[in-house]
Length: 155
Image (cartoon, rainbow, N blue to C red; front, side, top):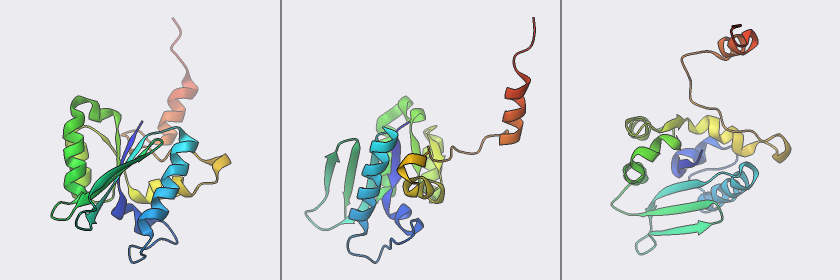
């Protein structure tokens, strides 16, 4: 499942990164590139407040970086991207702890992953790297395990 990432929402959730650092976006891009390689997943990350004349889209392998022009937000750019995806949005996961971004994702039927959960998967060692946590379901993990342990009904 590919991901749309709210970059400035994710940065403060990663130990050692800060929105005050001048190279915070570059550090996150580096981590996301590693994630894309390990997981073989596509990621689009959105950063707002691009300096005048610096708004752009940059692609590197499976990672696409959107630097959103001033006067527009990454939140609105993510919502627009979800609209562009149309019915295919349900195949995507949106990474953000921002409630407005999460609401836009849910309206588009995309999955939502909180930034804190996704940050853990970015920092996982390559050998032990796993998919980020999926959104909560109505069944607990224990209930799912019990269902699988029971097996199929006998005919």
